[in-house]
Image (cartoon, rainbow, N blue to C red):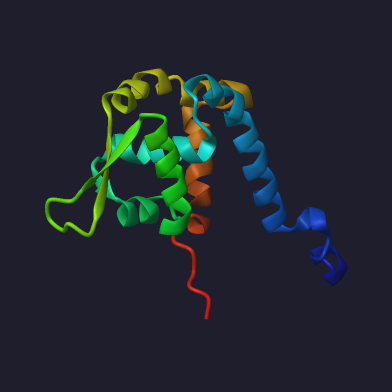
Length: 147
């Protein structure tokens, strides 16, 4: 049985375990992504674009669970690095579509080893990573709207 005092121990907090795990996982990705010239947030943008491009900034931000204002600097940096390009939408000239350049498409081949390298670093296999990802799904939906 858990006492009220035990409920308030830092080590028993779900939020602390998740934020610590997230920080540690990102730290594992850092040296793996460095040879690709990507940060972890940039890697996530590229993953989304490798799945579907071109796409609008709003669509990309929604996919990444970010505000467009947070996604925009990531896209601009990737554009500066020659991996993506922003072009006016043919459907709505007010909208910029983000697409991959030839270099961005080519980078996907080099990124194929990233998931295996991460799994090797943490000593996990595909079934255990899949189980962990599925267990986190209730926490990974869209951020609740604050009122």
